[in-house]
Length: 461
Image 1 (cartoon, helix red, strand yellow):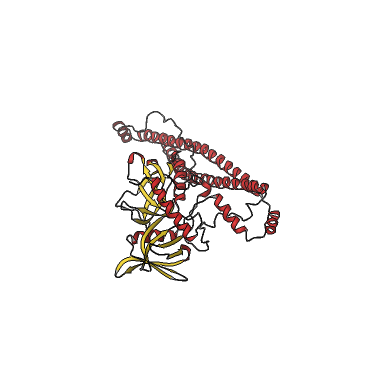
Image 2 (cartoon, rainbow, N blue to C red):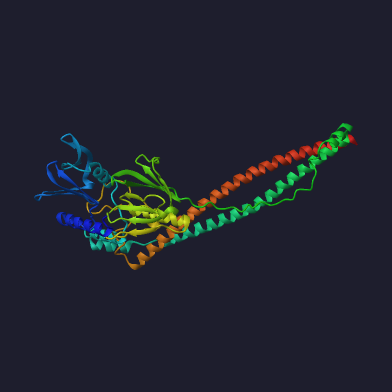
């Protein structure tokens, strides 16, 4: 069995060959390679990296490269009536690769990378890309932009202050409603005792009004007597609902025992993750739901974009997967597991794989599918909101931006808390309203009974 270190070395050799042949940047890594024939004639290997399909002939110097972002269509094709080819259409050409030994596996992997550009959040690499973009911008323009830029931290401070005050007001309201709920419980208990006393008076009046009533009381069991019921206050302390993160669905490829790949999704909840098929349906033929407390390791494999999920005491077979969004999968599982259990599975990086950031709420996003408007060398999403002048900004501006970002994060958390407090207040208001309606009915009924008993007494006098 090949060790992770040996596998990493094999992949390194292939990656260096592809980078050297096609002059790719260091961000390109060979994910998988397949023996095939270019245009169904020239034998060689097709190397798949994060952003390119690269063919190198076994004999001769024939090469071919196709940027994934330029592919308009891809389809499974045939060679001499054998379904073992894949054809790619770009704006400039139509390229076909045939005689695949694992055509369906190759197609599934390429289609996933085409639909879901691989993304790893790395602040240093973002700075590097910004440097490259800034080469096309004048230095004076950058300086003017810096001088004219001011970070408004006072607005976020004011918003934060208002959010804190709103939360404190909400908590005070919750406590007051809990106190009022106990008082309302006491009122309802007293009304129940009043009705119990009225039941007793009804029985006594019945025995006084007629001989038949007296005989009926004598031969029937008295169910109205007994000691007065003591009021035991209920615990009406209100619990603010915990903030529930909505489930997140991430595109993955499930790797089966025979190493074939099938498309699907991992749906990550607050305490578990569920494996869905390509139609977002739960798979019934295998175990598809796993709780976070059963997971022991998240193993980032030496093969790029691949990972294993391994379970305590081998409770389940390891779950193998590939995805353009491995970092997002790990980040969500670690964050949600920490939130639910106060601990998370251990993350292990195999030799040769570059470690990435995880367990960080600031990188909680799933890049949109598609490769439109992306450079050929970088496939990062454009939703990070990084301004071009931040890197060269003054320390004061950087500090102000960091301070503002922290305040915005805190405001976001406070708004979540306020929303939960509002829901708790709403639920308690509905419960109290129903209880007050019930008490009103009891009061009206008691008043009617009391008036009726007064008439009966007056009639006897």
